[in-house]
Length: 157
Figure: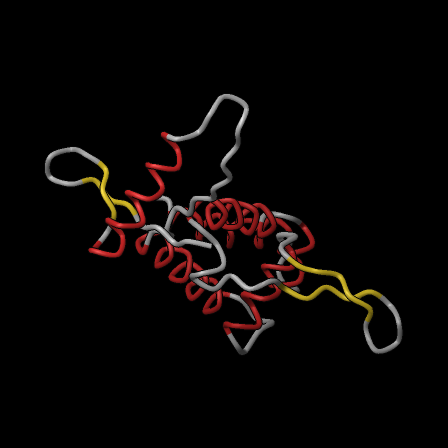
């Protein structure tokens, strides 16, 4: 499988990134232009994750970690939120019962669209009674709601 990174040049035209990218882009364009009616060509594209969005997500995660009472490790909090957002696999555990394992959110695993969707689902999960009651067990529902509201206001400016 070929890997192609394209960019827009100063002239406004698409081109491959670097010399190898130029060759790969030319090869791809030639294949597209040579298509006959009814023939197919499959390709995938990847929208790189926004470093700014990535940073925002992890800053919000760090702020939440500092506010909550259940997790000593920020990575465990991230994994719990990922599972809560439904981004997980279910596998048989040691007793045969199904357990959720969080999927990786590594930079190269999720493109920007997928990461945005996950971020939104994590935010939705945080608003649930289950998540709020778990993170702040000694607070009332109204107080835990205010905690999430404070977090969201800080990062939605």
